[in-house]
Image (cartoon, rainbow, N blue to C red; front, side):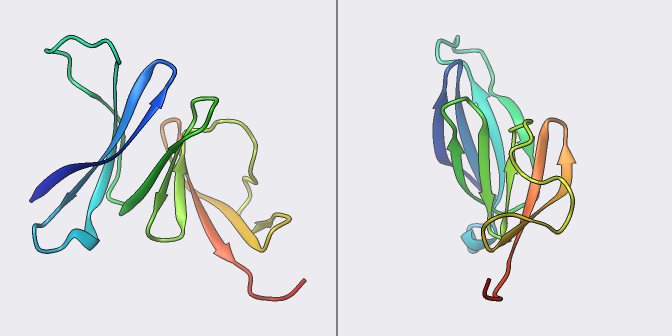
Length: 121
């Protein structure tokens, strides 16, 4: 198995990074984890694991307010955003052609599944 740091983002009080773990012959099935380290850390300080998942993580983004968003390969994303900026009920439509559904939670993280409506409105 190979492990690599795939993306890095900086928030006010930490440096966030996403690692991918995969067999050397199959990068496409890499699963990911999210870690945090303090910008002024001591050499013996270890990163703190923020999210451990078997999902195939693909992109990491930190909002200006410090919330993290992690896109997956299966039409969804993990979010540390605890505000009600998106629907919480499965199948609840938004103004776009996408429907959001909170599929599962993990501590302060929520996994939001996206489904696309191909019907014309």
